[in-house]
Image (cartoon, rainbow, N blue to C red; front, side):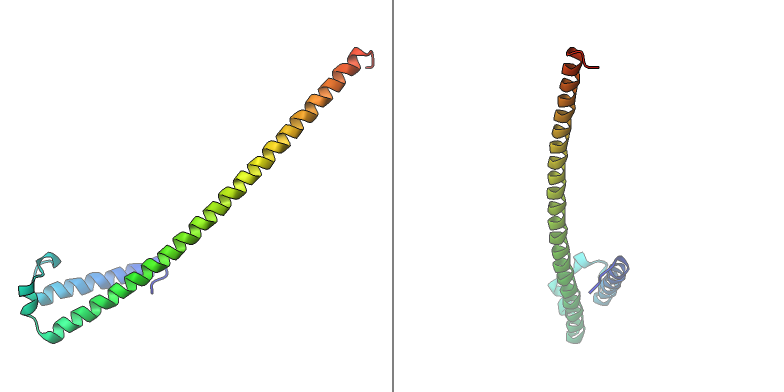
Length: 120
């Protein structure tokens, strides 16, 4: 099962090679030309080999899709947790700003009252 970009690239190269060889073996110019007629002309052992290899690659793809789904779900969960943390921190920051603004206003009023009473 591929786990990094190089392994995925190597797997892709293997599949492309397999498909090229299969096209050549079947005597067609592309996968779109596969037909019942073309397949009936092949040896049973050759067809068995093609099917076996195809199923192996399909199994690898299914495992990779499962791994990607698990990784995607994990990333979504982490993203949601990060967003919740950001919202919580923004709320705390807003509360602190309000307290700070209230404290500054309170000091200004005290300072203004003190000047009005003749206290320097």
